[in-house]
Length: 343
Image (cartoon, rainbow, N blue to C red):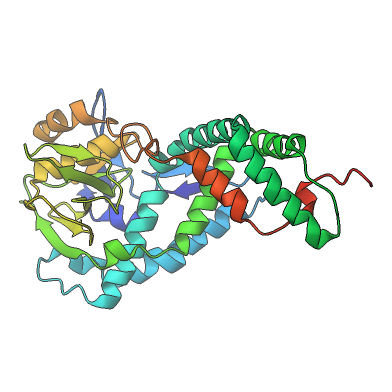
């Protein structure tokens, strides 16, 4: 089935009345191509198999239904009022918007594509753990203790620990493992509340109608502003000085300062900075309600320059080998991970 990565209601805010078709349409911007003015909000960011599960034919529809019911519909009750700088941001609305932003970030094709790189990093971490004799010895000791509740009175072996890790590597190396991991992330994030975002400072940026914001196909963008006022895209939501933006109308954009340590003076982002970020995070397209050579010229150099997991939101600062070891050492006993040689 075709899944939506950006809600239709949000895209409709950026549409114009097309006199030829008699319907609402978007101006679509794409690297290397002239602006196209007939994109429909209903289908502009709809893709085949975005939330498909290799073993569960109903999973994609279930995810789509949850995204609409739990995240889109509650925000749609007041999203039209976000065009006004006087929007009150009540605690309930901020809580709903926090979940909305979180899921908009994770449901994008950009985030889905990052799962492949994360899967490769996980496999490399398992291999590194397999080759670390010191950590393997500790893991063998833990596995031996796990045999006791099952009544298996013997020592686990290094070979069994290696075999258990090799089994995990084989599982993670399957062709559909990245998609499985992505869906697991989606369902995990549906239950997650980002307190730093929720407890941050929320405000609305404005743009003049003739110099509008664009919205990309990965519309939640983040950055940190350096001392030289350069924007470093793709900072995690818990990083110091991080800022997040989500355009909600051609004339209005959410600007969120998560509750994190701040050592830099916060400046009001310009429309051009927001639009540049939208192009940088985009997998393919940006949209707005007008055709503008000025907008197209500004977007073109930046399309796809903040790829998640590569240019931004990298995880190479995390010691994945140690993290995997800690997980294995703290998981509950399960004798099925060890082969009972006496059976």
